[in-house]
Image (cartoon, rainbow, N blue to C red; front, side):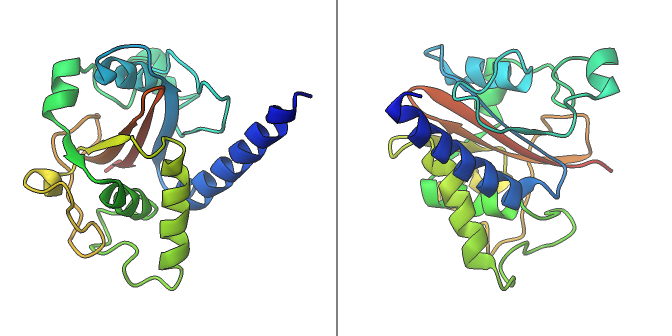
Length: 195
């Protein structure tokens, strides 16, 4: 084993544990793919289409990985067949701290709970897990969200305000997502309320 492999695997173990604590109990999609294009939206669409895999081979969460809908409807299910222009137009930039708050908020059924983690006893732990997951993308990462709360602010308070989706990226009635973009990777984190 190369000396760096044990560090790499330890980071992957911590990533997977934080990801599971955050999002394993809700209907979510959490995958990372390589950054291969100048336009990060092309890489995001490749992740949504599942035509790429995690470049570090770390854990992913995909409730529809073996879904009949992917075979019968489209590989990107539940995501719609989107264009890069739509990904740009339907998402808004947010700060790293707002991204962590949003990712923490996706840990609950956000459509049914107006303030998903604000009153939870483990709020600080949930936020720490969200920051840990997003740390993978580094200090220069940029974040975007589909939430309408970010239309007019790059730092909406996702913990204080009632969560809101935006343009639907999926076939579901409500969905809410976060995109992380670094020089080498893109991360796609989406929550669905399939009603």
